[in-house]
Image: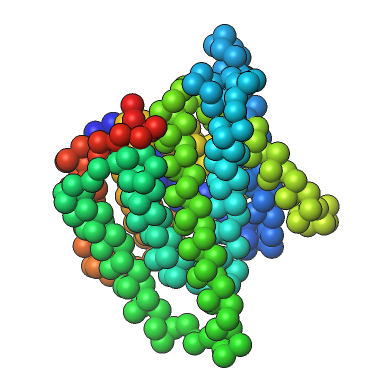
Length: 319
């Protein structure tokens, strides 16, 4: 029950990050890497300080993940974790510039089969047919939601011009790349939190990722930052985004330790339905009855998957 509640809190926070980003975009905001940089910086500063306050060595994670004498392989693993996380956040935002929300929502589900495959190969996870049935049921619910949106949009949105076809394909490819990177990031985080304290892992992620995203921000968004007409509303929305994403990064390790990356990604599918609820209650939008069927199917898939327990892992991610 606790892990299920945590998963839905993360889903709500995802709606918060999406809403903040959408409102910023309406105001002419074009600095997605700055958003990530500020989040990683807060994570690095907070959790490094927390680790030091608790009397632990922030420069080391036992087991060889982040020690002064760690080998090159483990350095590579941790850097790959940070890079995949940074680039996943950046790539998914770029995808929205070339394709539509429906395509991104559907293709982003590619994270789930990627996580299943990576867990089986690198963490030695052994899935049962019940786990498979849960995954299929949950994804089917989201596909129904996307199909409903697609049919509702027909006749409302003019078809793209012939010259935009290549851009749509590019956007779809970027979404698939982002989904794969998210899967890599989830699996590596699950592995690292299985080795040592999750606070140290987040401290290391924050430091490494803030450096990576900071450099990208400097090279890609310097002019935008310098000439952007900043206002109090912009700062408020940016703070909201950072706070929600900070909460996500804090809760995700708890879910990974209790249930694993596959259950995490299944739980996050419900963020699309919380977004619908936000639209109905706040924006006064109308929805079709298929939304509720989709939500029920996704929740049922999560329950089915979790009813069998987390798959047994024989690899480094076992706990």
